Length: 147
Image 1 (cartoon, one colour):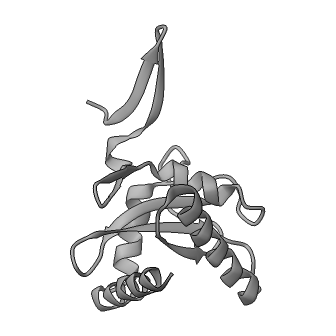
Image 2 (cartoon, rainbow, N blue to C red; image 1 turned 45 degrees about the vertical axis):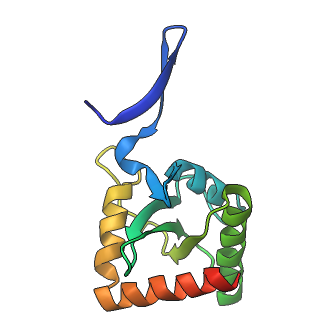
């Protein structure tokens, strides 16, 4: 059992994702590559520069996270990109997602050179100490409530 999910049509197997990468928010199944594709469609984001996953918030519910490698250095443009990505995810996916810009080449990769969602998730959790992660999730929750 590889954990791959796909479908078979006319003898051709098409892999659509991995079960362990599936994001479940309020009982809704969300494929991370759908969120990543939305980010990568923006001119500031290159293909393969976004990774999506979920983390538990301080109340035990899952919070969607999108990390985006960003080469932009202007703080105003960076802020606008985060706002725009958040709005696009809400519009196209009906999903509130915490968006964080990270340095280029900082997202972990597998031995085959693909972005590792699992390692990115672990790195995100470990880099945001428990108290800080709780503050982030609470701030995110309040921002969503006021949107």
